[in-house]
Image (cartoon, rainbow, N blue to C red; front, side, top):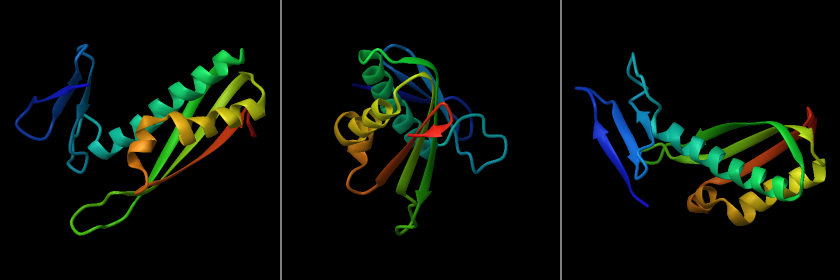
Length: 139
């Protein structure tokens, strides 16, 4: 796996591309007029994307019908010398459809305990927790 980062303005805006040419814009969001996401926001996005793929894959294999899938991710940071790494990340999954709540809960559990490479990469330095809601009800 390999990515490429290219600076695309005279300030802090970068384009990050993968080997297939898909890209995102990364910027210094503490500066006014930022047009990309911050590097730390990309970490939260990576947790959401990785675990989201896992949960959807597991539920599809169980023939669950997902009509809508959303995840909200919050990160709590802590000061360590001059850096502010994440201390805790919380993921809230919101699923709609004909989905067994126990299967949805188990899918999230499997993702974070076994499959999600992003959250596994963050261990043991970052505590990752999650909640699952199916059709508005907590699983």
